[in-house]
Image 1 (cartoon, rainbow, N blue to C red):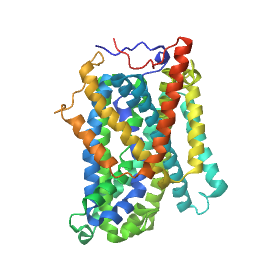
Image 2 (image 1 turned 180 degrees about the vertical axis):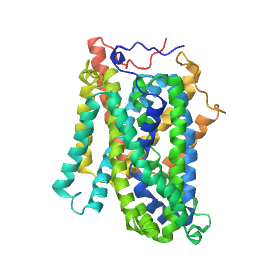
Image 3 (image 1 turned 135 degrees about the vertical axis):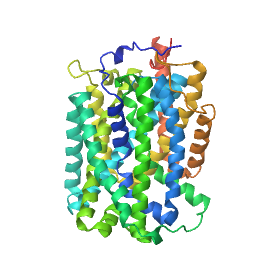
Image 4 (image 1 turned 180 degrees about the horizontal axis):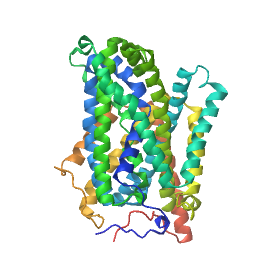
Length: 449
């Protein structure tokens, strides 16, 4: 059974993204603001055992991305995880997956943009507050909206430039920073309580999220069966190595004092280890990283809006593609307005937990979706990537996700629960109207032939 490729709504898209471009997108979206802000919190909870939380996140996320790699080699339509879930389980579950993708992507994007204003304020006191804060957010989103309206190729090049720019200070910290480490600061404090370890890993997971968003423009990827798995494994591998190096360097330089620098932990470590210039480099790097994250998200997230519109879950105007630039212009504009408003109204930490919950729920659907895609033998013309030991991996990934979600309180889950209930009600209303008018009630993406 081969995935249908002649979707009218996607016919005008340009397949311009290869391994290099998609890998850059994965890195730049994954490395947003989390790695610059979360090390202090992890150190405060776990001390010298902080690296354990990174290992847990890397293992869990490794299992998850293997599922993404296989699903992405079988389904190539825009929407990424939304399209995988819809193909595996049908329109209703696919719709819920799309809602979760939109929730996570938009909230995470807004959180990092809010973190950017904090980084700017640390560099130039007052520049990230009040009216100046709103002006900063409007300028950043306005700039990247215009870039994306000009075409996917130009937007992808900007993402690549941003990826290189953000990696410079982090690679410095993860490598050169190790030479300033004091061994006593990395002494093993003993095994932390399991609950504390899992809770810290749940918060830290935000720093690893992003692959699913980078895969949303799947309808613009060349040779998906080859490009998607290679880009995922390469991108996540690079990110994990950088994170471990950064945490150990900062922990080794500052020791217990790392927990006291919640606004700029890496900059504080760099300044103590190498002087003021190094601290400034990391502070500028944090701001650049968050701006680069915005460029990657502005490339990826409007395609979720486009995909849900293509399948009839959002107004059809949002799936119109510009004949001149071959991008979903209306989807880009509407998404830009929504995420700008959310960023202007929230703060980084207030949005992180909600983003994590929605992302993990969507990951759970995708991991289980791999099992269904195999059972249905959904595939492209090329041979799909198969997970090594693949029969067990989706179930292990699902169990790990459920373990992380078990740490979430009812109050923390409430916002996502309300959004899903409203989404189900809207889906039911759409179905009733569809039957009344004799129209279809399911989305178009995900049918196979």
